[in-house]
Image 1: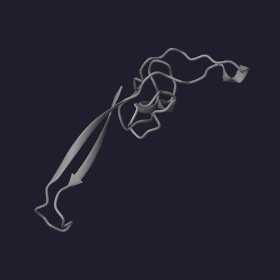
Image 2: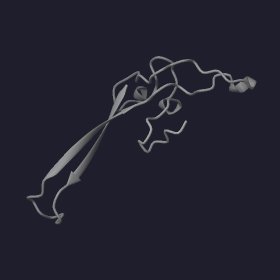
Image 3: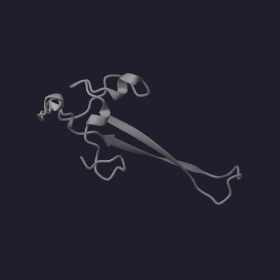
Length: 89
């Protein structure tokens, strides 16, 4: 699943200027393999093998945070490195 992140930047030094231009940058964020330890409650270590996060629903809904492949929350999937989202798993 690709998640888009929009950043709006305004050019010009005056905030009140009506002629200031704005530009937007769209970044695509991809979440990698699932890191959830399914055997933690018995003292073991086992991951399910899900290789990529795929949202269960549309953006902006609660289902968009659940993986359609493994059923885990998006937080259990590896974040991309250098994204500032803790990609050090």
